[in-house]
Length: 161
Image 1: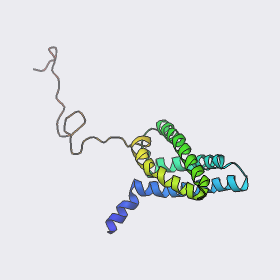
Image 2: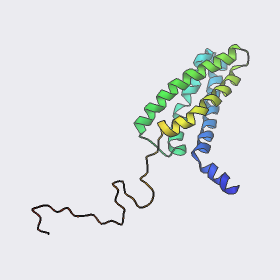
Image 3: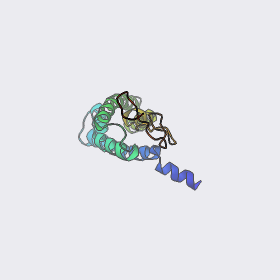
Image 4: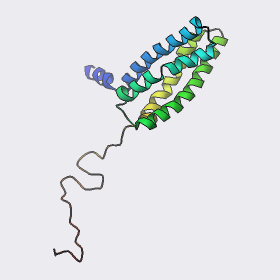
């Protein structure tokens, strides 16, 4: 059981969830500040909170949870595209929950659970993909093993023969 817990705590899933939880608190705090203190419309406050946690979440997910997978520019572009999609989904869900009387906080929690469900897999396989490792064992990418000595190609003009 101890080994399982240690392995889980070191996993990208645990790190993703931890960073996601911290990002959620930042996001919800900004949403509440903009909506309740500044009096912004709910849809705008929701978007501001969501985008406000962008840099915090991106940096930590890329470098802590997914070990810098993918290229920096490619990761930012893919993350930004996903962020646009997620922003629209979250804004819609939060507005829906406010409209039906459940409140924006309940809507934000539901929206976060829904988006986290797909985000982990999208982050891992598309936004921050890990480089493919060569086959295990001693086989090299070109099919030679590391114990093989390179063969010398003989040409008609070579002095060996």
